[in-house]
Image (cartoon, rainbow, N blue to C red):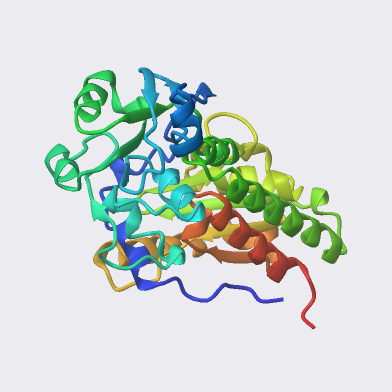
Length: 337
C-alpha cells in the first residue's frame, strides 16, 4: 500500500499563496428555495401551428427575491467556489469566477484564460463582470443584499442559500433544473453512487471501523476538517468514521501542537502543497516541524503507516472532486493487483 500520493500540481500553490485569514473559513452558504417553471405561448391558432414553442424560463425564489432565468444561458458568471465545478460538471462552464479558486482546481483541466477572474464572492469586480456581458449571475446570500442589487442591474442574478460544503449534491440538482440540465445531473449522481458501490465491493475491510482524519497544517496553525465540510461529506458517504475531534463543532477546527493526539485516526490525510513558492516552503517546514514532535510517532495513523497527501480535490468541490476522492480511497484501501 502506498504511503503518499504523487506530488500535487504546481498551480496548487496558488491556494497557499493567499493570505491565510482569507481562507480560514472554507464554508460558503449557497442555495435555492424553490424552482417554478414558467412558459409563455401565443394562444392564436396561427401561432399554435406555425410558431415554435416559447422557451421555458424558470422562475427562481432565492435569498433576495425572485429571478427569471433566461432560456439556455451560456455566459454565466459565478461568485461561489463550488459553483465553478458544478457548472463545469453540467457542461456549462462559467465565463467568470473567483480567480483564487480557479488557480486551485487544476483537476478540472480548464483552459488557462477561458474563465475571467471576477474578484471574490465578498468583493466582486463589478466592472469586470459588466465587460463579460453575462446573461446570468449565480452567487450566494453571503454576498449581501446591497451587492446583489448591483449585480442584478448587470444580469439576472440568483443568490443561493444552501450550504455548498455539505449540500453540493442539492446545489448541482438545483442548478441543473434552472439550466435545463437535469439529465446531466442525474447521470452525475448515478456515476457517484456507482463509484460508492465499487468502493464498498472492492474494499474487504469494513470502512465503518476506520477513523479517517483530514488535516491542514500551516505556519502557526493546524486545522482539522470535520463532518460539516466537503471532504467530511464524501467520507460519510463512503462509510468511514471520523475521530471524535472531527465529529462535533464547526466544520474546520483549530488544533494546537500540544494536543496533537486530536488529529489522530486509523488513517490520516494531510493537505500538503508541493511547489516552490515561499509560503508553500513555509507550510512544508511547518509539517516537518510537526512530524519532528515527540508526539508524532505516538499517533496511531503514523504507527500504521497510513498517512497520505491529499490533493486540491479534497478541499471543496462537487461530483468531479468527490469521485476523485473515492478514487483515492480505492487506491489506499484495496490491495495492489
